[in-house]
Length: 129
View (cartoon, rainbow, N blue to C red):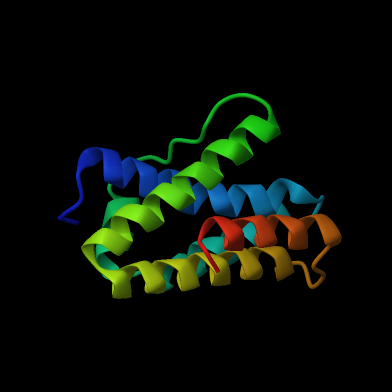
């Protein structure tokens, strides 16, 4: 059990999987390699967060790519807010793990493109990094 509410767990799943998806679709690339890189990098999430992320199916926002991105960035900001209130150390570890995950997804095919780099920058900003 993660110790998070159902809503917090959903927000974490949206944030983590959504960030990975945003980077992956930013540019054409090796989707399988990117997915595997992201999933491997998720192992660095704090244990309670990883439990929450693993506790159900990811729920991504609906609509255009801009709508999806806005919803994912909001989930990242929301995650940081409640994690920081509960455990600043866990919030820092979460932010580092998500940024690392995004960087690994972006570089999975050996080349980080401009659009991927821009998405990683927006994820960093949403995490306050």
